[in-house]
Amino acid sequence: MRELFIVRHGETEWSRIGRHTGRTDLPLTAKGEDQARALGPRLAGRNFARVLASPLRRAWDTARLAGFGDVAERVPDAMEWDYGAYEGRTRAEILAETPGWTIWTGGVPRGESIEDVALRADRVLALAGATDGDVLLFAHGHLLRVLALRWLGLDPRLGARLALGPARVGVLSREGEVPVLGLWNAAGP
Image (cartoon, rainbow, N blue to C red; front, side, top):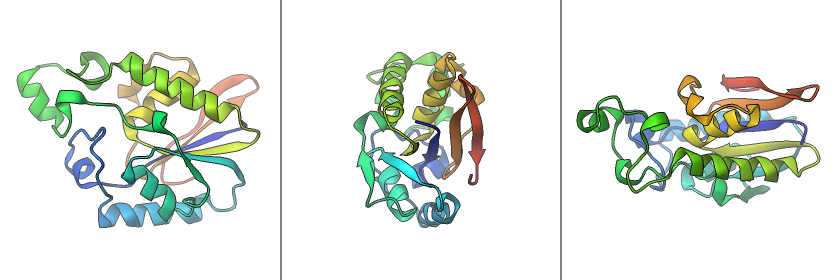
């Protein structure tokens, strides 16, 4: 792999209002569909050797609407964090019960640990890394933040420091042999 282009899915109703959306398979809003279509021209002209996508509808539809649905491969390891008991809840609701909680340090009852998410991110990186050429990945906010930090060799708990909005793009690349963030949280490459 030369570069890994990562794309967070477009807006959903829950992402719009700040609800944790892990495995609930929500559709994109009309705005999210527009965001996904707008990604197409921004990514056009790139020759991707491989296109990967979370099988969850919001990521898959983003790939399809951006023009990559016919070549994308469904990758279960690219699904969002399993938020367990916090699925569908806002951070404010969780903080009312557990003051000081963050997804990065607090864990989730009956959900995945950050270590579990990091292991899945490592498998996605290995899959992308086995490709000769650039790779495009459509997935989810928290998973992509963990994946970027694993690429950089940093603690995934630092994900709190990486904002990644809906339909935003990042590029994981190298300077020489050193993994770097070539682009992050951009409206397009």
